[in-house]
Amino acid sequence: MKVTKDMIIMDVLKMDMGTSKFFLDIGMHCLGCPSASGETVEQACMVHGADADKLIADINAYLESK
Image (cartoon, rainbow, N blue to C red; front, side):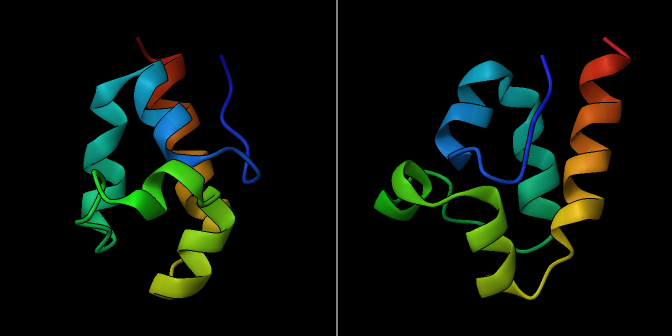
């Protein structure tokens, strides 16, 4: 299972709730809000001024380590 920038945030969370810490660490504290259900990881990163490539790399490294 690999996460990509075009995935919806809620879909990533459903894959593994442990990924929530990565979103929280970059200031995405509203993981239960409607935006999380319709916004891609890349879109959310743009809104929050975060590096989408780094976030994806960190999440995928976490998932691979399990």
